[in-house]
Amino acid sequence: MAAIKTVIFGAYGMLGHDLQTVYPGAVLRGHELDITDERAVGACIRDLSPDLVVNAAAYTDVDGCEDNRDLAFAVNGEALAYIASACSDAGATLVHYSTDYVFDGSKREYIESDTPAPINVYGASKLLGEQNIVKNTGDYRIIRTSWLFGRHGKNFVETMLHLSKQMDQVRVVNDQVGKPTYTVDLARKTPEIVGLEPGIYHVTNDGVCSWYDFARAIIENVVPCSSAEFPRKAKRPAYSVLANTKTAPLRHWSDALADYLNAKGESD
Image (cartoon, rainbow, N blue to C red; front, top):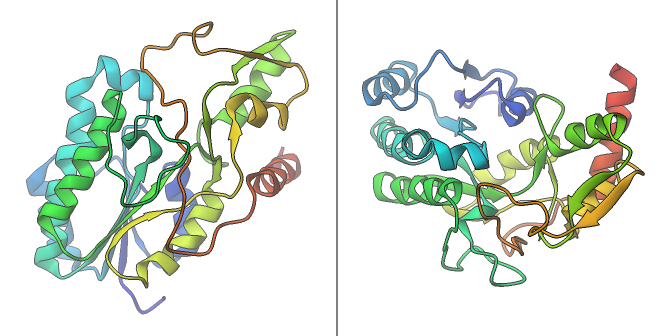
């Protein structure tokens, strides 16, 4: 792995921080590189001439995407055409992370070959990114994942811990079902995916739960509610469970959560 020249985009985000551990010699690019600037992206990849580009940069505020549609499509969609094209020109492998929200939630489980049908701007922008990658390079690994939590960014676990201290009862929806995924585990899985054939891969921690089930594993003062009782700007799929048919599954999300909470306790 050390012999592979690697560049990480979005290197200082929640997933990017854990990718730094997996690729310790990587060249890191954060906000100083505007991935929506085609010339800047092309120059960066051309000048560095990497073997591998790992893109963890994204606009992930699902409700914010509804208000900032142009930005969402620029960052999550159009930028991937620039990155993929530059990778193709440089002969670099591209790894990109996508989302369960490319699906509409009408099925209980989605495999890699299922037809996407996003129901919000975030999902639609991420789907455009996938399509632009496929159009512009043949050497890609698109990793769809879901419900990310990690030590280096805002996430559901931290939100629950915070709200639990501020409120007598925390209401969490029990009719949206998916798979929580620890960024440490996702990052560690990435080199294995790089070694596989080009294509789309579903990578999540094992185990299926609702947001309420997830919350109940984090805090005690949580009560269930429906999505109708807790309206959000962006519509969410009811079932966005990703089935990985191509690689061995990651450990159960509850085990990953225990490690996360233990690490948090040690560092706090």
